[in-house]
Length: 339
Picture (cartoon, one colour):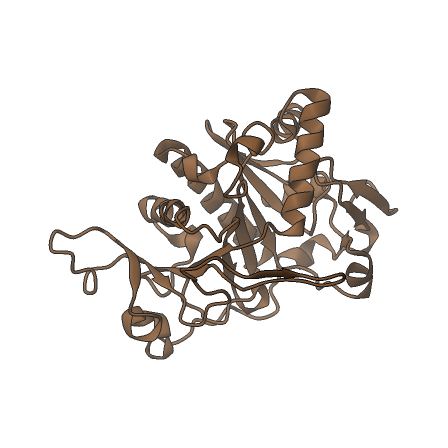
């Protein structure tokens, strides 16, 4: 199945994270395309998102398309709404931050919003090109609005598809969370990227893209403005990273043409995952520089999208060490996905 039958530890050249590659434990190639259970479409009449104004939150933040009379309730295509059950809540005041010798706590201040598309059955790869772009543009629009909240340090933008990926509701929806801290995983990447540019005077992500284009082993899809590949030190099986080719630290600064190109690649990658892996559940998320100190990360960070199909379940070793076990060689993953 693969050239390597022995395990090896691979280190992410930017974050510094170690990944244990164990290709001998992988399933047979034919098994990769077989989903145990066919995806079930939840009935329309039980879906809370069919009437989001009533069942999600009456406070709409953004509605598309724009209408002359402002009435979006009957003719909406995409909505950005407050989550009815938020993980963090908005404070008009500064969030309290307390520290002691051993403990530190910050109030759960922030924003937790939903992006809901109209069609009950159409996940991101099934949307028209225009509507897929609109989802990414809604992420961008809401991100820019969140700059006004001084409590927010980082904005997490993600999509869970399927119960195995954490989606409790079938109807396609996307989430945005503005939180008052920069997550440790993001900090590892920021520190690594800063170290690399100090040593090599070049963005680590741009260098990685150049090397992937040179080797052309793990590239899955590419167009004039964006590229997708299976990372050499893939965090999980069939992980895909999608980058705009032009260097930019902030997703929120991306122009329409470039955002459309990234959206095209994301739709293509998700279609390939569905076709070649048997329609697995998955997550995708947008990595961008922290909201504050933008100048600090302008040259060293490069925004991108990560796609993680649900393949294996983390267990004792992963929880104990903080390292992931990947049973699919990224070279092999790319060959499967690019078909």
